[in-house]
Length: 222
Image (cartoon, rainbow, N blue to C red):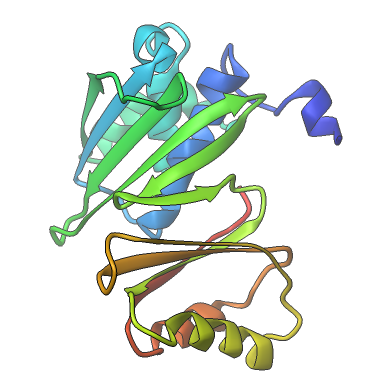
């Protein structure tokens, strides 16, 4: 147990689950967008998020995180206005997501070039989160570790190519968790690789060059 577990996060807002956790969910989306400003956001809120999001500032917190602010940023209070100033069109939708944690948000974004993406995550208490879906595919990570996401086609040898690259070119990196999800055999798939230490930017570039890899991104420890 660490100090964060005992006293909770440094934050703006009334609730670690509904505010600090929501900021961290938004920051995952910010990483997925590689820091770009979205043109459009659809934010589905489920469970208690849907019932209390205005009173607890969850709407502001999610937008703040999406725009790259942290849980202790004063800008959280004005996140709705800042989003409008940046030309971000957003919509909050209250909808039950079957089987989801009570504090769940599903965020779909559209960038200026027309590309889209999505993430579903839950605020599980004390400002901690669990990411469940990326672009509709199952994942399982918390953001507590540096997380490498590798989008690829489900082909023989792709996992071996990624792990071999890390073994021989980045031997100082220590993998602490690995998860694979795929839409169907031979279809789109995603590797989630959690790493104890911070990998260099060249790792992403090298992984993207591998056969059958469609994209790779690093979500730094939140």
